[in-house]
Length: 464
Image (tube, rainbow, N blue to C red; front, top):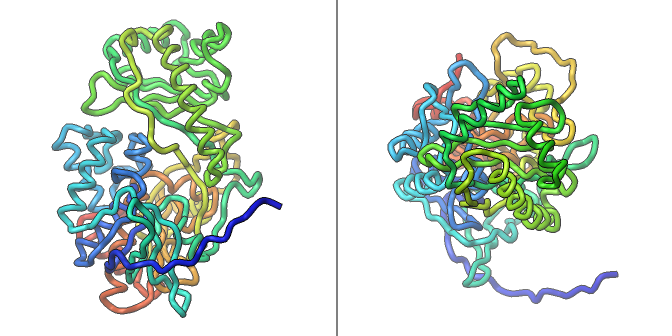
């Protein structure tokens, strides 16, 4: 039996009160807060880091994946405005659709702060969510938070869990699922980074030479300085990695999943979607997160030396940034009024109360990257939809969830977790919160069709 202590009971003061409390200021949380505030509600974001954006900024996840629908629609007016500002600041590039493909993560954090400030959102940085406070009916009355001043309570009417790991929902007692039902494991965790000091023109020529040398044109776009390698098939860059492994300059894990992207506004920099760890994958286990941070930095330093030795254009390259948060693809998912399934995605299911449309594929990382199935689409329209009910936490009148921990099964979550979908979930949650307050009704009584209609009024795109 492990040693235990009893924490003394203490009386906590109420530090803040607002209409809507958003736990987590990430991709979904920042948008949820802006949406609710622009609907006239007082809003507080509780955020443990010192910037908004979550994985997109603190995690350096700066590709904005497309939804896979012709025209690449943005089912979020706030997302449109975010990228308009990024374009103005030279921190993204147009791809002719409402969803540009990449952005500068540092400028993204500035844009989100500007938009929150304009909307009147109060941000509590360096403040940790600790626990839920419930009323006699079992609904939420507040959240216990902690920062340098100690523990206090933040009271609210509606609460939106955008923590990514469903921390608020779990502490409130909501049901949830976690991990691959076949293995019990979460998807692999990454630690991303940015390398600067690169001569990208020279490196682009080098990439083209690799195509010519190997006769393989796979996972590579020289003009964009994009390249990828996995351990499963032969990519253009596979031979270079194998040479480095044979020479002792890399280890096998370095080529199991490796990917680089260009960064708009940074002519000498590239962003990397690796190293990826396949065994320490419990995204709610602090020891596994520690492992990723420690071993991840060691791998990044090893990879930098590899680039400088094997890649042309990297002679003056250096590590510009390590991600301050690890790259978590999936952890917990909350049981909501509707739980999206993998079959829903693969059969292209449609819903009257949809808030977003997507055709992004089932995307499960690991040693086996492909997903075998025999499910055929039953709808000719090339997309599935996620209903508002997948944001409404089952068993609560005033608790919503948005972001990657919304109501979805493992397979469905692997498809819906991309940023355009997450922003739409935040916008829908913020608008629904305002509607519930205005009508003094439970969130399950909010009409999801009305939520989408309001999103369309504000400028969201949907395919008819």
